Every structure is written in structure tokens, then in C-alpha cells.
Length: 302
Image (cartoon, rainbow, N blue to C red; front, side):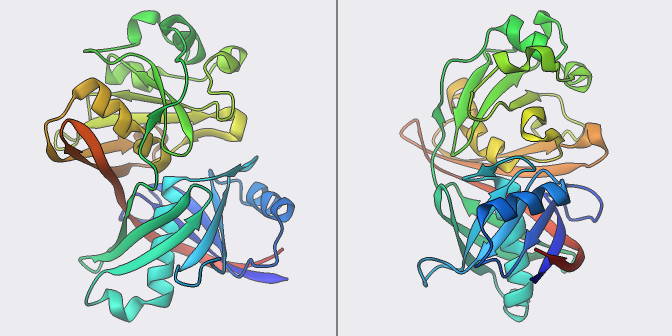
């Protein structure tokens, strides 16, 4: 069956930057094995398959696949799918006001707000369906340094130590002492299995130094065993990073916006906005936001 698909660049307002995403529509009769085959064919970090919602009050069911496996939740597919739905199903409404989209994902219902950005692109913000929690024991500094082809002295800064957090999908977080160390990081597959978590062996490396002083964090994400050598922008990791921020920075009550740079080392600059809502010293809620632009569309026989 021929099915329409779109390619979007996500966490950017410019084509050919950000994180590319494939979104395939009209997938109600498509089984998981076929979805996995299509995701491998696109060979992007993730592909979204849109189906009719199980609950008719929601907008759509979204199934998310890397080239090698299905994920219960991911940020750039959520933003991209929400933007696509807004542009293709409610474009006239977007011209005057934001549009709400609810996506059914493996982690639960994800509520998104889609809005125009000065007529140049479209932006989506979603509330985390699950607050981040620690998800296991982190690797040692030495093990993480070996996995990233770095020196032990490159790991850690100002109270930030290796940790494992999940807001639906687990990531090992690697704080790096400098932007230079972040640029030098390279996965060493001979040591990769030692870094965990076992169900999602992905490392999110980050440093304080940024290219733009108006932003707050630089990051890179590596998941070679999932078919993702490096990801230009990782909203699911940014969601889990909210836990790192709370544990290491201990922000005051109120709302705090953290803008993350990612993809710069790949020539795919991306910006992810993470908003923390803190009450009584605890994380009460968080949101991920970013822009997306459609760059291609077509049909696939699947």
C-alpha cells in the first residue's frame, strides 16, 4: 500500500539543520515488523508512524522506531509529529492561535501545543508525560572515559558526576569538563557495553560551555548499538536531563528555561528548550519545546 510520508527537520527553524525525522501517515494496518523495516529504510535516528487514536478524544497514536528498535517515547518525533499534524490538519487555525495535539505514545498520552513562529516555521511544546527518575547505577568515570575515547580528567565538573536518568527512555549522562572534551568525544565500541542502561545503551554527553552565550548547555548523544552513531537533537534525553539539573543544580522554586545546543559537531545545529517548574524544592513539571520545518514529502510502498 502506498502511504504518504513527510521529512521534517526538528529543533530548528531552518531547513537542513536540526534533527531529520520521517513521519509516515495512514498506518492503521501496518504491523510492527513492517514499521521496523520502513524505519531501517529511512535510516534516520527515528521514524514516526501515525495511526488512529485508541481514545477518540486524542489526536493520533504515534509509534516511534529507530533503525533497530521501537521506543516508547522520544522528543524530536513528538515535536515533529505534532508540528506536522498542526500544519496539515489545522493550518488556518495556526495563523491565529495555538493548536493542541494529544499523541498516544508508549509512555502514555503526550500533550502538545503547536504555534507559528513569526510565519517562518512552526513550534511545538509538550509537557513531559513522566517526570525523570534515576534509572540505575552509573558507570565509573574510567569506564565512561574509555567508552567516549576520553581521559578520566575530562569527566565531571562542579558537582556533576556520571548518572543514569529516564523520563520514559533511559540515558547515561556524561558531564564533560570542557567544550573541547565534548568535541573530542568518540564512541569506542569495544567498551560501549559497559556504560548501560542495558535496555537503551545511549550516552548523553554535556558541557557548560556553549557557542552562543545566551544558551546554557552543549550536548552530544551517541547510541551506536541502536543504529544511531550520533543524534543531532535528542528531546527524550533533554527530558531526562531535567533530573540531572534538579540533582546537580538545585534550582530555586519557580520556572527555569534551559536552552541546549546539540548537533553543532555534526553540522546540524539544533536548539532544545527545556523548562523546569520547581515547587517546594522538587520538580513539579517540565516541558520540551522546539521548532520544526517540513523539507520533503512523498509516498512509500509499505
